[in-house]
Image (cartoon, rainbow over all chains, first blue to last red; front, side, top):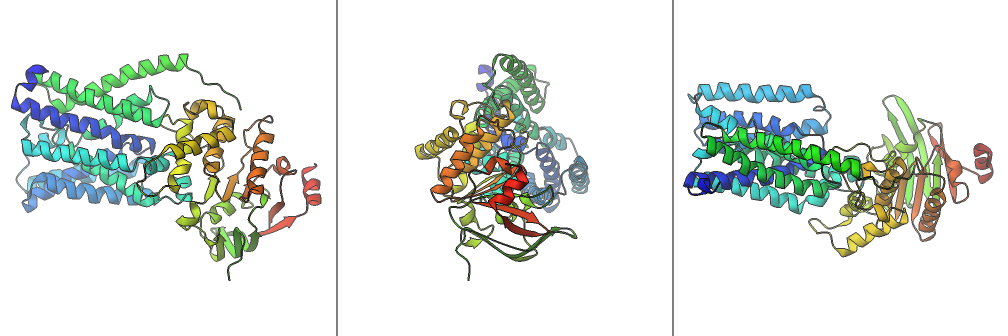
Length: 277
Length: 233
């Protein structure tokens, strides 16, 4: 780890990975509670089409991904709100549309080459300081927005109908949540890739939920797992040299989930609140 | 000219598909009234509450709640609503105090952080339903009755002017029911309007001011004598 920090590429990788690892569970906790865990994947697939669109019209892939991810996220939320995105079939169609349009678009732009892998699975050791600045800005924007909207987002996540009946602007909050997801997806594109970024929104949250009694507690544990996964995964990839950090970071989070699941099962056996009807 | 009732329905027509639930339904409930709504399954008891909250829109007629058209956010923030059931399943753990705090959130100004006063309101509501000692526990690890009490505390928090409670005694044990009923009566005596939907209205026979029966698309009062005859109490 310390060896990694002596290199410029290592410092850039660590800052970017930490930014995504810490911010992803913040928005992911609300997605998981809303049973929208796969929507991050859907947005990731659509963002690939955005990268292709950027290549076709001659702008940087990140901007194409950002525009298509945000528009796609709003469209997905509109479909979900109308009850047309309840089954896995609808999301599957979105996955296929995004990835097929991405591949065809990149080929048409003459960019269907090894660089596609860096979009799909990240290229953490090849990022620039400008990339790091964009990633940190997106992560900070997402974490800041969720901090400000925490209570209303939680009320909607607990029970959408009751939140609507209480006068909260539920539709606006739902759009805000998916737009934040889109921002984070694009922020994570260079870190763990479009196919794996959603894992950092979900797996640390699943881990945190195993050892907590509250949403807030789950969120803090998830942030810790996300950050630790980034450090461990990055260190393993840097040490081994041949490994892709996007994959090792996500594998580290899955490993931590297994540890937390075991700890949670033990704690659950020992803790029983006073029950009465 | 709008009436002065906390709740005013005039000529309301509503149905799911071709089946009418309400047909020319009228209702006026004065502030400070505790009313129980009863009727057979499918008669529209829960639908009535959702119409009052603006979650459903009538095909015809007008609904005014707390002096404003149903569903307006400024009125909704003055209403406490407890839906049927105990909140359903959750993917992640949620503490009892987080459930109740969700009832305070809509009454805050946009982006206004929670303060000491808000947590005091949460604790008062928890004490009112006897869950003060369990505020930090995961609500889904509690019994069904305790979960129902947490949902009721979310509705009661902050002393709303109108309480709409859908089957509030479901799952709650006999020992706690008198305390809940006394709390509802106390709120009505203090000026709040309380409308309770129940398919088992005999629980409420000693505390209600009005009994509203849903029948043939209309909302009508029944006398205490009729009520006692229906419930056998």
